[in-house]
Length: 490
Image (tube, rainbow, N blue to C red; front, side, top):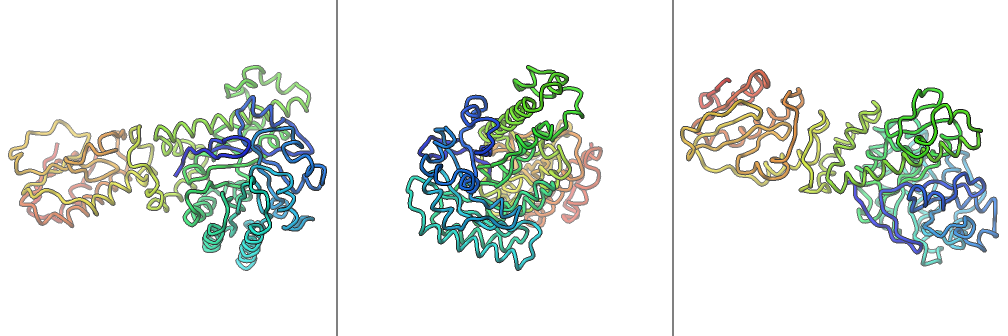
């Protein structure tokens, strides 16, 4: 479901997926203009509630672009994060809508009520209802036609409430939607639950509207979020981590004192040795680490965009999710939604299919092949069926080629009739020659279903079985054709 898109705003176009670095208007570590020059940042986010508290009407007079001395696209949050952390904010939802209209960001957010992960079902339902009421009220209140408005989805860990929230806010006049309450899940590495939250929301939101995942800022999880259809992220992690001496990578985070080398090619890590970075004054070190963290972040986003274009996003996700066991939990949870994801996955891609582990069995290409084989395929009326597992030795010549239907057994796709083997990706794949148990099970299951459906029409079934690779599983799967089966070992 990952996509490269263009979000048009009055202050310029934004390529998605992308991160909006959080800018604290009262404590700017790296200016938006420096971020644009050095990292290619196209969209930033700042907190309208904090701006109201610190600068009041002065910011309203100058506008958010004037207050930040930045002429690029800006999104504003409304104080929802502060509600999640502190329980309340000193502003009404009407006031924050009018204030954002006055400071005129490119994208504004209503004052939602985050559900969080500790909420009871009753409290979660209340947050959904209040957020929806405020979303409806904001549609009537907003007055600046140049501002794009974001309608958040709430519900937390209660999927039925998330689905309800997404359906109802999706009916309203909003141009993009944010998936709320993921921060505590991200902080606790609870990626399987994050997948349930995001996928439930995505299944019920309008697919043509960009999806923003609140508070997501670590490059190690971007690929998983993008493959679920998230287009925008926001985070202050780049500077929060820097203040704590934490060094981001695409595979995880390190404290500076844990490192022996700087494992990165960014300008900061090339210019400074580890000892030099440790010795610079604290304020300067924070800036240097913040720059490194942003370089890593936007480098990963560029890799993800390239993977989307070349059709290798799933391979990239599988690689990234092996960086941490909890990420792997998230990827495995994602396979529960494989039928929904298959609807959006491109039917053909510029790159070959690469099998990188048992999770590849549930990729959209495999799901699509099996589904279409059962729904759209009818084998030719030939009396002999020959089953040939790939990676075998050279096959013998067919004695009766004009009477034989040739079917290859290709892991993880399963049954691949000869007449379909050039359909993508059945002729454009790479899988290990040493088969794992999941690949073998995948093939044997599809053989069983194929023979249950069509086995009765054949006079004879020939199975070439490489027992070294496949064991006896292929024979067991074909036994139902009984006396018609002839097994040829090699």
